[in-house]
Image 1: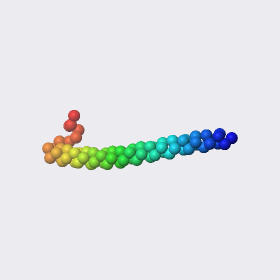
Image 2: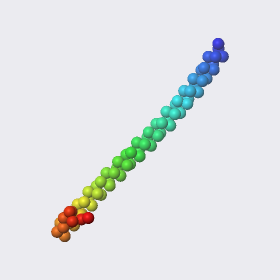
Image 3: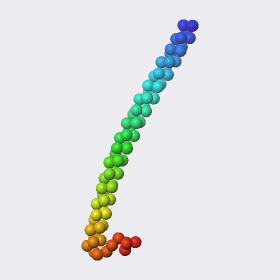
Image 4: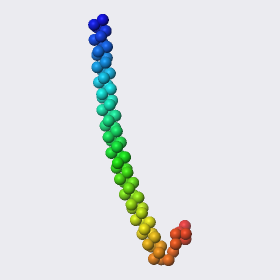
Length: 73
């Protein structure tokens, strides 16, 4: 009986260690993914701002040359 409890206790410790290790790895992956998402969101914002600036420049060019957007093909 004592031997069985000892084996079960060892198995429980091993499983507990495995779970803790998996939890730590998962937490690291979550942090990496969060950082990546934040980076991509910032990059997306910068690209949108650049696109908006390009649209404004194009509008300015079109008004200066007396053309409209419909004539662009």
